Amino acid sequence: MIIRRVAVGVLLVLSIVVFSKNCLAVQLLTQEQALEKMFPEADEIVAETRVLTSTETARIKERLGGSLVHYQKGSKSEEIEEKVEYTFYFAVKNSQKTAVAVIEEQPGKWGPVKFIIALDTATAKVENLAVMSYKEKRGRPIARRNFLKQFIGKGSEDSIKVRKDIRAISGATISSDAACFAVKKVIALYEELFLKKEAEGEACGLEKEDTD
Image (cartoon, rainbow, N blue to C red):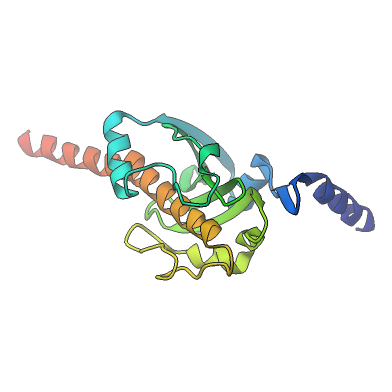
C-alpha cells in the first residue's frame, strides 16, 4: 500500500508541468484512465468515429449559438479550432450499449481544458464527467467533484448555464462556462448523430410497414 501511494505521488508530480509563472499544465487522466472512470462496469468499450456533414454541422452549431467552440473574451480561444470529426466511446454491458462518452476540449482562460463526458445512451443525459487536463490558475477547482456533480442528470431540456442551473467557480467564470458549453455540445452531438437518426429510422420503418 505504501509503495502504491508513493508511485501515485510520483506520477502526479510528473504530470504537472510549469508552462508560465504561477500557471500549470496539469494532466489528471490519460484516455485509458478516463474511459475506465466513466465505464467501471463495462464488459468492453467500442469506439465509433463520425465525421459531421455540412447539414449536421449547421444543426449542431444552431443549438450551440453558432459555433462548435466557445469563444469567450479573455480565454485562450486561439488554441482551439473547430473540428468535424468526433469519436464516440460506447460502454457495452451484456451485449448492450449502455452509455457513451466523448472527449471534448474547450478554451479556458490560460489554455485548453479537456473533458470527458459520459451520457446515458437512451436519454442523452449526463451520467458522469471528469477533467482530463487543463492549463489554469484560478480555474483549478473545475476538476473538483463538487463542481462537476452539478451536471449529473442534465439533458438537452436543461439550461446548463452559469447563474441559471450551474454554480460557477468563484473567480473562474471562463472555466465554468467552458464546462457548460462542453456538456451541451456533447449532448447535441450525440442526439443529432445517433438518437435522432435512430428515431428517423424507426419512423421510416413504420411508414414502410403501413404501405405494405
